[in-house]
Image (cartoon, rainbow over all chains, first blue to last red; front, top):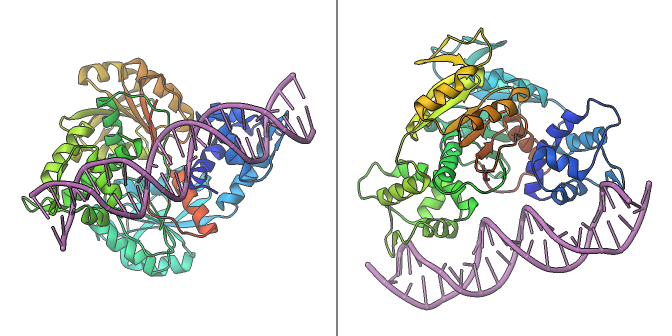
Length: 216
Length: 216
DNA sequence: CGGTGTGAAGCCTTTCACAGCA
DNA sequence: TGCTGTGAAAGGCTTCACACCG
């Protein structure tokens, strides 16, 4: 399945969720395309990678497609997540409901700043970064989120991979290198604004898009 | 210039910034590629869209390339920014240093929840969403950030565009539609984790990437 | 030599257009 | 008839390979 398609599956899932209030609801590729702001042919091709899910003349059964996407994305289980960095962003992420809704459970929040260790963030207590290995092992964590300053992020990534984390989402404003076999995604909030700024300077024109990408 | 190149310019800028401690420093395309985790040919092609900046046999002069990228991205001025939504994420973004460092100045934070209005977030006071028009006008804001729940985001986007905002960065977990001429980027934090989850289920393999995209 | 700038090739993604099924 | 599933065409991006210059 193309990487570009994978990056769009969560979008479809989200849009379908909004339609799933009625049981047995169906959508056409055109209807779904309108909801996510894209072309119907693309929707059909994307969904076709999941198997022949549609019924000709009728469309797609919403709940069936959702189940299929969830299974493809591995969202049929809960993923325990550890967040490194209890600054403003780390705390906001720890409290973010959207993660839990998608099946990601923030089980630990750590920081290296002793003035933060021991403080409460929602139902979590901030632990020492030195406890990472223990926390990852005891909660069977495979997914880590980095919300530290740039200078710390590579060290944190090294530690996370050393203790067995296999997927990392980094918000640190710097490029990180991870070993083969570890999946990495980087989101840089300032970069997003800079791209907007470019389009303000030159003409806006293009179509709506957001993320796309891979791993290592 | 290709959209994919535009999306990488902030990455180069960031990496070059780390090299700029020495005056008159130079980098080869290969050196820069290593820093951002990509192929040297791509770096050369990307930079070539900015004009012939390199010197054969030597490489690129760091500060000159930085200046050229800044100018291309429109980062030679300060951009006042308004954030809508003073929940955990909105407050974290309001306090995020990276924005100011890149030239984006958060001048106002608004919310529709009366229990939040009047509270302090760093040096900002949370204002009523009803004040958006006045705030945008008085600060000449062209860039808005949406950090509200999904159900409010389309209304907020409509209001922002109505009062003259021309670029929107949305963190709301839903697809937004904006009029032609307005630039939109959407970042969905849960989607990022879902994409990681896919790669955990299937084999990790690909290379590091993050954002790419356009606007409307 | 070392390293840029760039045509051309190759690969990936999107879009078209339509056969085929309910 | 309505709408999916999909070959094939078109477009865009990345990578190669090398001419050319300091």
